[in-house]
Image (cartoon, rainbow, N blue to C red; front, side, top):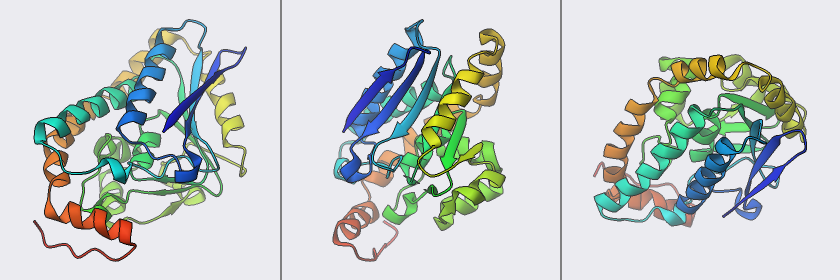
Length: 253
């Protein structure tokens, strides 16, 4: 999957997840590319703010299931080190970082949006956790970022039930900060990002860091647990059922 970047004269950098035929899955290579793009943006004084969006009418369908096969625990945990770096960088980004969500934000795509301090979604956007459908727990920091937005009880219910949350419902819950008309999320997000760039940078960073204070524990937990789940028989069955478009038969092992 490619990551496309475009910087405007106003100092706004738009980063686009660009694999629209597959609804922009966020696999290992994409996470690495996104991390590099954000690192460059953080150190580029000409970049005032960043908007993260997806191509083709969707934000991201989540993790790339073709990239989730069985590996050694050490290999899995090394990959989760990349995730930890990316999500921490996003949650504590030194410049305004806004997600512009159209269409689906599912699984890892949902988590990716929640790692952004601000989320703009079009009225037809949809959010779903979806991890347990393939016998996994949420990752990419969602165990921290979602309850930080909507509270622990509601977050637990959404994660376990895999309920689809439409954008108009997501806003009062706290998942979405601003709504936009269909096709207009990027424009609205861009305006908010540049508006936030007017805030005093040091004070803004102190506030952002405070609200991300509990993220490290969630990332450490998922780095320990998710590799075990990825190698489980249930996860293998979940991947097979997804590919074969059937209901999985989980056995708890």
